[in-house]
Amino acid sequence: MWKYVLKRLGLLLITTFIILSLTYILLQCLPVEVPRGSKTAIIEFYQTQVNLGYYRRIDETMGDIYTQYVAGNLKADYMFAPTGGKPVYYVSLPVMVRYWNWIKNIFTKWDWGTSTQISIGQSAISIIMRKLPVSMKLNIISMIISVPCGIGLGIWAALKKNKLTDHIISTLVMVFISVPSFVLISFLLIWLAYGTGLVGYQWPTMQQAQNWVVALKGYVIPVMALCFGSIAGFARYTRAELCEVMSSEFLLLARTKGLTRGQAVVKHALRNSMVPIVPMIIGEFVGILSGSMILEQLYGIPGIGSLFVTALTTKDYSVVMVDMAIYTLIGLLATLVVDLSYGIVDPRIRMGASK
Image (cartoon, rainbow, N blue to C red):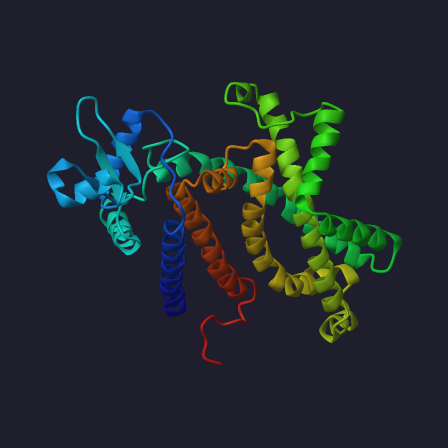
């Protein structure tokens, strides 16, 4: 099994490298905007980019090529004209040169680039690390609530199959699966925040969060919005799997040997029905993390989801790259854990076996 795990980890790293490489090259082919901020901050930023190997500085000491820029025959990304001095030009190097230097800087300095728009000159990875705990905490709380509620409702519906309880649960499940997440978030905002005023209409600031009541109210709408779809998904799959197992021949055999219906369900049916459901929990976590982008943007949550959208709209490509790396790694690691969890739930499944 360890050989299989190491092989999968190797493939995971190769896949991550390919995805991030293609993303970086494609992003660098897009138009680049001048960073926001004071002139001093912009010049410091470009000088840092020169030191990192992404840009080239063109000044009067460079002869003919400098003349070409002064005459306007060649275009620069940024031009700085010091008081009483001649202009200085900053020009981006070819895409593949920047890509090679980007790879080299990551492996030698752990430098993923600096922000150009969100916080000029600041390390992109430090910006992400400040935002990541908020998103992770929100999604973990949602999963803690969603998993027992969804599986519990699924079991209840399966045990009451074709009865009124089953019909009510199944109807609610289909409603919450069908309603888009942004519609649900908007409804909760209108109903709980603007309508009744029970909770705030946006994420509390750091000062407001000092009051634990206000901080707790801030989690109500985001957690509900993330939970409903997950609960519906878990309930649907649990009911379907449990109903299938309960109608199987081995469960009927267990009943004929003297086990009560409850004992047969708990000892045999539940364990067999959990084989496809437990890996689904891990996959659902990744789905919630991706889906929280819309929620974070609408509710003003300072997480990596809203940061990703902001970085894309402002063309802050360094922040986009780090955000992409986080999402890619979480998604690929979740896939690996899902595969390994099959063997944990059911030891009869051998991971990496040839047959």
